[in-house]
Image 1 (cartoon, rainbow, N blue to C red):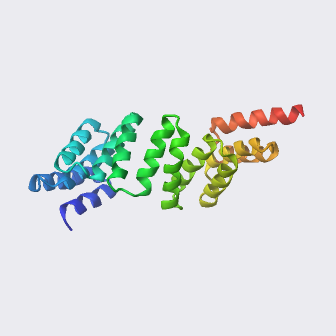
Image 2: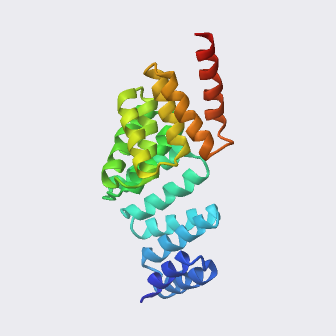
Image 3: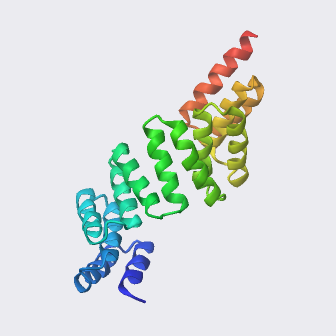
Length: 220
């Protein structure tokens, strides 16, 4: 097992100091290989040393500016710092350079959602959902983008799909409740708000939705 693999294994086991030592040794022995800088950069994101991570990804790109994983890593740095416009640019570059994985489409979609551009986010989140149909978070984010784009029937189906993967997903129950309100089925909406609160008693949005529906039904 080479140093990079040893470092990745150490990261999986949360042995971060050991991982850092392996990546550092690789960089020292292979200073012209960008792979070491990328993996070290990913570790630095994990421990929230964003300035150092940026330097490592930029060093990788100075060795090979077409590396999609370096652009993806840099995008993650900006995303973690809530600089969604810069994150968007880096994720787009990663895709342009050939990265075709669910995670990059997810992160690009979420960057656009955070810039209140759901219609632009939609195709990227759809692509992510196609690439990983069993990832609950990806499927949920795709559902959100459909809802924000006012594609209510499609969002309804998507949130049901999320619940088929995880029946205890409180946010999916809440959002399914909202789609039932759009469909003018308040009793069904109330069931899902209640279910969200059963799973997560401090779910403020579900609590507020439940209160509003109960007032609506009381006044009918």
